[in-house]
Length: 423
Image (cartoon, rainbow, N blue to C red):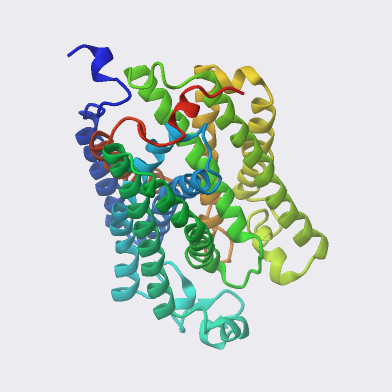
């Protein structure tokens, strides 16, 4: 079979031998992370690193779920040829649920305060007594319940897996029969799925990340997490499309206008992220309320007033990494359509999201003085291996799903408009 026939839009993409390699990388990353447990007094650090790794890939997959549903609810045309890759990415949700399970089991059967201090009423708070005697915990105890946490986490993954299964089934089946009922089904799924996804990602961010320091108050946390979800999904989908183009599958399908449109979305969500994050920081700084400012103080100064490593991480993430670099870079039309140019920013964005999650999660690890442990330490190794390990499993799920459906939704009513997409 010729390459042109093999890679025709109506064909099934060839299976990639990279699937087994991705699985091997994932297993090695997981084993390497688990190896950190062999070091003395390192359990808490490894658990927090694993939380970073799982949350990073969950965020990207939620972003793909949202982009798929946004595509359907707006009846978009330009993104039809891209949508199939988001749908393949959704195959990772069951695997991510399994990979989150060690955190649940370790918390349930091990020390309750392994990750989330509020789960152990006897946990000693630096300068605040124990959790059980903490007035802020008492006021929030109906929400900060281990049973609520476990039940909510199960609901989060159930909702994400269920929505993904509905979207994938309708899209893949339409390739065979071309029935418009599948398009209507996905619009209905998107109509109720977007609110469900919005609520579930918000509560997941609050339970998994924000409650690490449950004294803190923030009304913008879910929106911050949403922005990272979408930006990560857009960046990873660009990398996937460029890979498919180089492989030959997307030649004659992906054009500069598709890249320009997705680049515009990357720019739009860069501005949105900056607005949300700056507004939160500015309002907390301006109000100067101790229940809110301590969260940023922990990430800027030590108890003796000296600056810590997290101050510079915060400057990089909040000012340069997440905003100035991608904002100024994506203003250029050329940077959105030239493959090598958009590839750079598509790699940059997930890297910065990784550091953003580290900034939000790892300072919960403190020394005897109540200071956040530094980022650059031996513990950071487990964070890197965790992201690689979970990422290998995510890529394996994507690559195993890739040959199970047509390259693009060939019978979607918008497919011709998408193939001829212009600005």
